[in-house]
Amino acid sequence: MKHLLNPLDLSVEEIDEILDLANDIEANPEKYAHACDGKKLATLFYEPSTRTRLSHEAAMMNLGGNVLGFSSADSSSATKGESVSDTIRMISCYADICAMRHPKEGAPMVASQYSSIPIINAGDGGHQHPTQTLTDLLTIRSEKGRLHDITIGLCGDLKFGRTVHSLIHALVRYENVKFVLISPEELRLPSYIRKDVLDKHNIPYEEVVRLEDAMGELDLLYMTRVQKERFFNEEDYVRMKDFYILDAAKMELAKEDMLVLHPLPRVNEISVEVDRDPRAIYFKQAQYGVYVRMALILTLLEIKVS
Ligand code: CP
Image 1 (spheres, protein in one colour):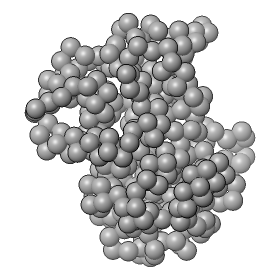
Image 2 (cartoon, protein in one colour):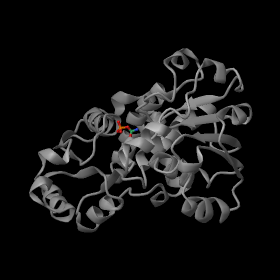
Image 3 (cartoon, rainbow, N blue to C red):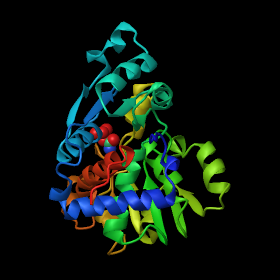
Image 4 (cartoon, protein in one colour):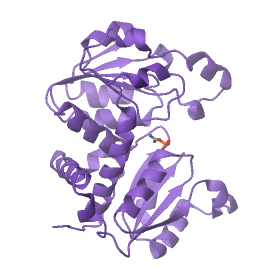
């Protein structure tokens, strides 16, 4: 049985197949409308979510299946002290596949060791968010036409932002991808990713503090919010939270075909005036998240639709 805990659980070929399937689902949704009849998805969210939980649920419903689960640890028996390993043993009796978000790094991996159904990591602490990465890859491939030969700027909270960590792991496997890491000193990409992923594979990257200095060379700008929930004190968060604000003036420094992505939720880091710019594709990106999660559910459940 296969789980999705980390983007590297999928080979480049497997990712291509999922993205191709997602494109076919987008083009022919009716073909897939009963693919998961009688199947159940459990969404176990120990941490808040809008997009990831609801897009997994929409994905399963679009496939004809049903959903069950909880949207906060407070409404589950975790409050009574039940462990993730015991919980997943129960859920394996109730559902065919499970998407789990947890504030602790590695919790979905622990669940996978006790589960008899596929586990999808829907975000674990500041670690990984592989279904967001599939969403990002589908968005980039569909809107840019390629996943190779790109210069991508990753801007904001690169220290705690799990979407960025997962995206880097996935993109280093494509040819001629350059990263521009745009962050304040305190929110730099962790050294274990710089050294073990970028340096180890001789991936070109530069680190800059000012967004304006990077704009002109980017094919893609991936904005992220400062991850309030991972800060140890409010004061540090308040100091950092508005460090970057992408506005119309900064967009004028960018290439005409540079695209702006954001995993969302947005706080202040993208001014609402940018929403009107055709290069801003973050809401479309969220729509791609439904197609790609439909493709992922079919793949993990080994359901083929002809
Ligand atoms: N992108 C993302 O993970 O959003 P949610 O936290 O709303 O699920």
